[in-house]
Image (cartoon, rainbow, N blue to C red; front, side):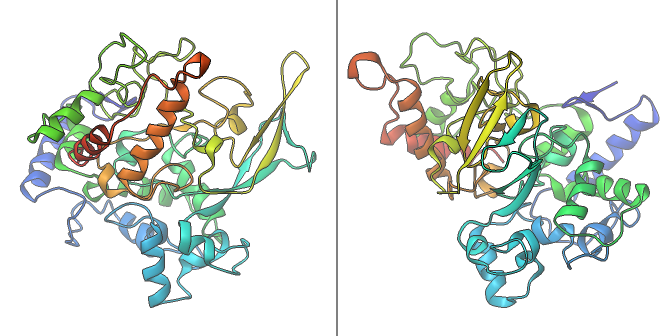
Length: 392
């Protein structure tokens, strides 16, 4: 019996035969994120219709409003094109508007972020509104490429326990559904989200069905081969070592979990949440909140941040996996899923690498003003971008 990314997908006998048949058909048809056909062989009943057309009597949005076939998300460029074509596009309604009530589109056009209302853990309050039990933060739209079939951790802060619950939440919050989806409708949408168009490549589609994880590309050019060394699971031997520094948090079959070599003792292998100083640096310039955490010993900790991430769900105010931490995303298909980070503050892979150059300089700072131990050169940055483009 195969287990894929923590999920049990196939049962012996008939399921294995079915998987082989579906895989063979899919691969022969050229499985990938860019299939443009409307073949309904994998429609799973009315799942496609529910995803692409059903508004659930809400504000006019469907699942496809925010999750395009090509990228699974929305970029500022997408938003500007859609606004030019139709200023009344459902994308700009509700939490896609500046005030959350349908007025103004400047944030969506500039950053493609939506206003997300996140529940606060029982021990977390807002300093300026202690009675509030939720907070509104600005977040990008997570891509649906590869996630529905291959990642059981859903949402940027991991707050939804299943794909069906995530769908239900999105219909209620983002689409402002006037009617609740039935259990069958949720199931159909979830099944549809595991069909071939939701994968970035044939290899990822095959992985979902067979459990055979894709291998890191070898690289063809000198830049790609040098870039690969950053993603290899190797132990750290010095603070200035560059080999393996990306694999520390982008390891495992999906390149979305920490490995055993991450030089942070409290973080276990297989962790799915980390802070890489995106909220701390706040390059997006989002409004700050003063989050007050009541700790188990009776003390309080203030976390001033535009978005405290995972900590708002767990109530934990210390460590690398909670305050200002977000889900480590897969790197498979990463060249297709811009913009990046939870706040869309990196528009390109080059922007991502520039952020990490700053991150590594901060975390490897040496005492006495000697400067950082780990510095990414311009060649390193170019090599990293070249290699990430291979991760399809």
